[in-house]
Amino acid sequence: MNPAPWRNRLSFGLGTLGRDMSAALVSMYLMFYLTEVLHISQSATAVVTVVLVAMRIFDALNDPFMGVIVDNTRSRFGKFKPWIALGAVLWGAATLGIFVDLGISGAAFLVWFTVVYLVWSVAYTINDISFWGMLPALSQDLKERERIGVIARICANLGLFSVVVAVVPATKALGGLLGSEQLGWLAFAALLVVLMLGFQSLTLLFTRQQVTGAASQTPFRELVRVIGRNDQLLWAAGAMLCFMGGYMTVTSLGIYYFKYVYRDEATYSVFAAILAVTQLAGLALFPLVRKFLRRFQIHTLATLLCLVGLVVFWFAGSSLTVVAVAGVLLFTGQAFIQLLMLMFIADCVEYGQWKLGRRNESVTLAVQPFIYKASNAIGSGFVGLALLVSGISDGRRRRRVQVRDAADSHGADRGELADPARRVPARRETLRRDPRRTGRQTSRRLTNSPPRVEAISPTTLALVSTHPNR
Image (cartoon, rainbow, N blue to C red):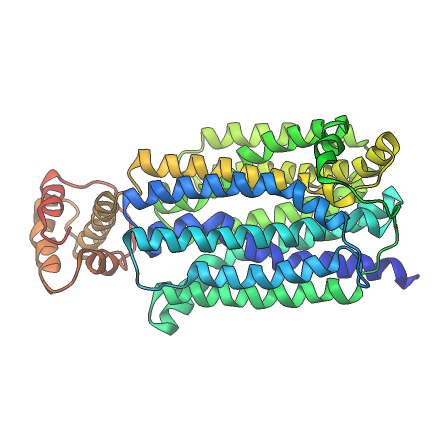
């Protein structure tokens, strides 16, 4: 077996592993961290939602400009690797900055968050544009490019789902060791940063570029022409943006579903593991499916799987079995679509070169991170809106739900579920046991009991709403 192709396949593919871990932590769980760990206020949640959406749109619009910078770079290390290295280092530092608790609040916290998140976004852009811009330069053969893309997407999804599965148990375990849930999240973020830098080093050291274009420069004034006149690129980008916007909204709400609908946050990790296996299996089977079906047929099949999955989820309610079936259908279809979209965009490099007479890998591949960031902005906007409308972002309502669960659990332990009135004195006694505890501390302590019964009497609600530390 010729080891040369596998050198690029593995070194490029493994480079996605750590970077998608760090990206998943921030893109999928930042809002959860802010509302459920730092317990920011409802007004702060509204401001953060606006900041996230605005920053991601701003960052997405910068992607093509970064693509021009990369395409115009000339160095002894090539045009991709210097930017990959710089972006990775800045990205890691900004990730730690997001999860560091400086003990500030109010306007000072919002300013700090905005600045650090801006640095994170810019660093992510630098790394992402240069990294994926390298893919078309690794091979001009479409079959080999698909093989490299399959391995890269499998590794990227391994990184993403390892975070999805581990985020709840790992942060809780690290928080228990370090004495603080917030420190648990910081330690988890630090671990992911180390992994990201390590796997990115493999790409920098071992990947070899196989395709080189003409040494012509691309002026910024021609940026719109390079993208706008590539009609195939525009069609692929539009389709992928619509799909990923809905997909990110659904997946970002998953952890809230298990906490507030299914009412067992720990089950989220088990569910995520099932979906991870499903999506990875879909990616691994893609080369086999490709032997029998054309790309158009695979895309049609995947779209139907996603639509059926969403319909099943609509009728799932709190049934974990039905939700799992919906998730398997949705994530199998998504596995095929994400890989097809990557191949569609990569193939547009040659189409643009044929049509415009200039090869622009980074500018063309900049459309992919643009789509992911724009879809993240759409997802963040809908998630933030859902939190505000549902009242989850309201600290007082959130504590009422937590106290309700703890009260029901407490009553179940005493065999008092049949008489709600008997549970009230017990709850009053628990709340007044240590009057020096704050409302946040009380709610945290009460939620240590396993949640169960959904019913709660008006008397208990009145008690919670009138408690001085609510």
